[in-house]
Amino acid sequence: MSHPKSILIFGAGKIGRSFIGQLFGVAGYEVVFSDIDQNLVDLLNKHGEYRVLIKGDEEKTIKVSGVRAISGLDHGSVIREVSRSSIIAVSAGKNALKKIIPLIAEGLLLRYKEDKNKPLDIIIAENLRSAAQFFHEELIGYLPSDYSLDKLVGLVETSIGKMVPIMKQTELDLDPLAVYAESYNTLILDARGFKGSIPQVTGLAPKENIKAWVDRKAFIHNLGHASAAYIGSLHHPGATYIYQVLEDEAIYKAVRKVMQEAAGVLQRVYSDDFSTRDLDTHIDNLLFRFKNRALQDTIFRVGRDRIRKLGADDRFMGIIRLAQTQNKPYGLILEAMASAFFFRAAGEHGEMSEPDRLFEAYKAQGVSYILQEVCGMDPKEDAGLIHEFQKCYRYLENHYNS
Image 1: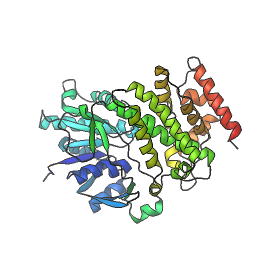
Image 2: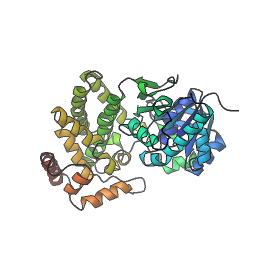
Image 3: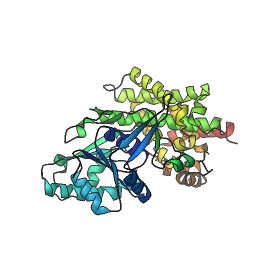
Image 4: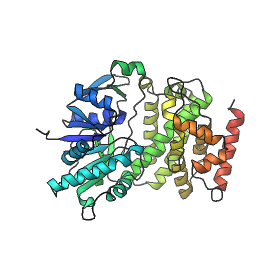
């Protein structure tokens, strides 16, 4: 017998379990995960539940029950689940989407065959700008021309603000299904993206102008977090945790100024959505959360993967480009970005992430090579920006790089 309300979540990782699965599970939905990690699938099916360990001033445990899982490699099962689910969510990482979207399309066609008027909403829980447009373009390539995608499928963009740190292997050995998270539990999503009714789930925060909120997440939260990792590790190379570097008042103030510079740009672009006071309050709240000792969030986790984080439309370059269109300053953001070039933090076993090893290989070909190949700067059109960056870089190289 099928459950009256169910959510299919692609990706049983940290955000899938600690955030999406938790919100819907607590609200009474059956939570079905699709993942390619067979061991994780087997454990979820064996136990039918998992724990979310909230880390903060008051620690508590949330048990999520009514859980099952299917293998993402079992295409038939995935297609059937898409066809029968009340709602689905995708939290598997951008690289997995090319494999997931064709299966969603097949599930939509099966759903259409069974009921031609039954819409399906897809919550896109990815760090992906213009996510709905991306999904629309991909899905349309797998669906017949007479399928009414715009009528039957809701593509719901989100702003994922929850911080979920890496758990140590010793902790995972005790309970491989447990996941750490902070107490923040608000899922901002696009109110206009839904084709069905918005689920009555505590923690969902529908917004009319989702682009403003996605940009706030990318260009204040993500920017500030990464800046704390890069500036902090440059001045305190022996530090392990984000809270450690933010306890240095000079680092705290430097990171706050970077975030405020970005906020000045966003306030001009989205003046109908955010006041200066709104954004200042948000910055102070974020810094308070970044300083959460109990979360044990590492500099390595927050700063790793510079190939992506210094990408042409990501947290640094994205807000710099926006600042240029608004004729607003971005010098402090550029300095924080330059500090990323000296990032050396390693993981629990002393390992550097694979994208960071690639970043270092690029750097061996010269800073200009990274600015072009990773950051998307044009040697002619961005000559002034490249010159500004080189000044920041040389200053840090002369004063901090040993």
